[in-house]
Image 1 (tube, one colour):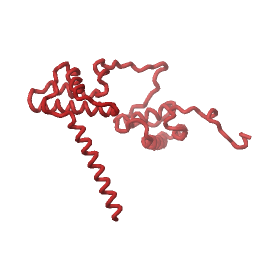
Image 2 (cartoon, helix red, strand yellow):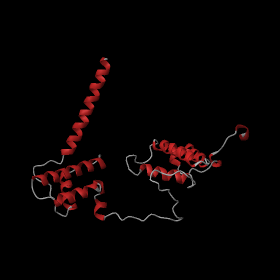
Image 3 (cartoon, one colour):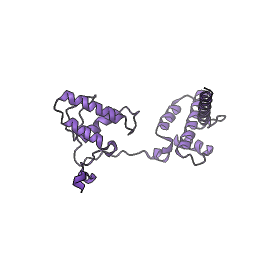
Image 4 (cartoon, helix red, strand yellow):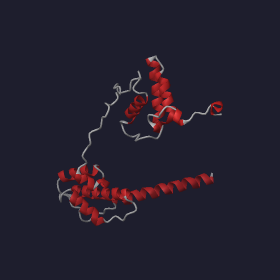
Length: 212
């Protein structure tokens, strides 16, 4: 009966190399492998790459995104392609049993990872600045960024300003102290203001559409 209906089970199909792209992409790449003319294959592969870029996989803003797509194409094709990536570097298979070197995450950053790595760069810059109003404003901005980052990382928890200030002091080993007379809510207030303004603009736009 199955033969009459020509049913093909998944267990009988070729295994998906990278399942996120689906079987259609894999079939297209397999078809491209059969094209003997290098120039024609180049055109077809580039079109497949553009199609893969439109799929919501990975961080598209990353400069390495397109290069990563080409690496995936080569992997799906079992590295049997004549097409050349824009960089000119043809991906090669990693040696069998290859394991990337494990990077040690700094213990100081591990404890405060919810603030992100970028915050340490800002702190180093503030430490190098001369004392004065400009430095105080910059340190206040760092503290405000820390509060916003914590709020984003854990929105369900109450953010204690005292804890943020203590973290700032601990992370810089006492070299930076949150200045008096400044608020930790600078960025939060601006974020809320922008959100409210966007909401008002949308409401005004809807009202105009209703009138028209």
